[in-house]
Amino acid sequence: MDVVSVIAYALLGGGALLALVRLALGPSLLDRVVATDTLLVIIAAGLAVYAGLARDPTVVPVLVVVSLLAFVGSVSIARYVGGMLIRSAAEEPPR
Image: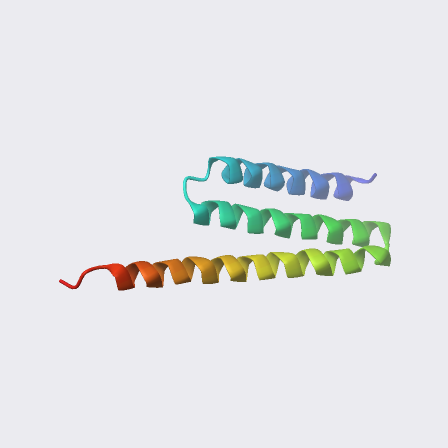
């Protein structure tokens, strides 16, 4: 392994560790959602680094699936939380 790959994987591993800490300690649902999305982005970046350094194009479909999973997950959670906020605003009594 050369120096570039060691540095890249170390930075990605550190970011993944910090995202896991936020996922475990996050006080709210949105903190955990952002940590999960960040973790999926770090996994995608790790796959991209591997594909680039190893010159292995067979990883690209997995990279696309992980990226789509991160996007669809973020959008669905945002819609869910947005629906919760709209419902809670509708249930409040008028002032």
